[in-house]
Image (cartoon, rainbow, N blue to C red; front, side, top):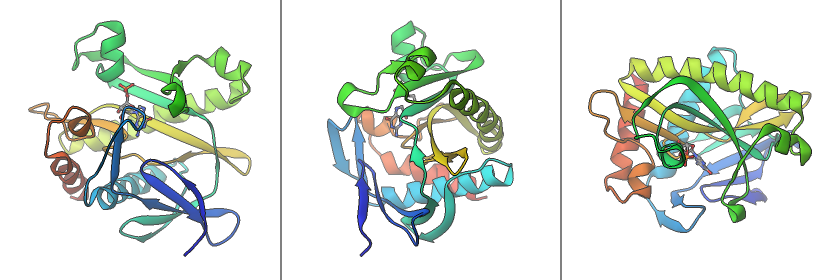
Length: 232
Ligand code: 5GP
């Protein structure tokens, strides 16, 4: 068994084949509210791995460099070992979640433009929103890195919006993470129903982790539906 480098809430990062790679293992554990709500959902790891790998493949085809090197099996992949930038990049097309709550906008309101916001990657603080001058003041990322993340996030949003629209899914919002690798920033972590809000375009049925967060039941049916639609 390879050495564990880091264990997160939903993934384990193990030593890779050399010092430039790592092995990511997707766990079945579902968490919400910075880990305060936690449950094992049998098969979640496999579904998230399949969905994220499919999406990363499509992004690579469209010129976005991701950390994905090779899918190893149903629940793990070899990735480029990058140094994660400790801010989450939140992309929104439709008002929902914390945005709706904070600004008093009904969930489902179409936004006139895509918004990008940053939050500090720190569960103990509840991942607070942070602005660009605060990020640079704290030395978390440079102004140039912030700019690169915004440019890439908008490009990723164009690509993903098309992919999901084609399969009848509304790409409401999602979280991206980037990492420093050699001399550049690459897309890391995962893009899955754990990190995105996916709603059926016709019915607005939620197909993502909000089903878990809000105790709506049939959590993995939504994940399975997303996977099947992307596979066609
Ligand atoms: P909100 O700010 O509304 O809670 O989340 C916005 C979007 O980013 C949602 O799609 C949510 O799933 C995702 N997101 C925000 N923070 C995190 C996080 O810490 N982990 C994951 N997996 N997704 C997050």
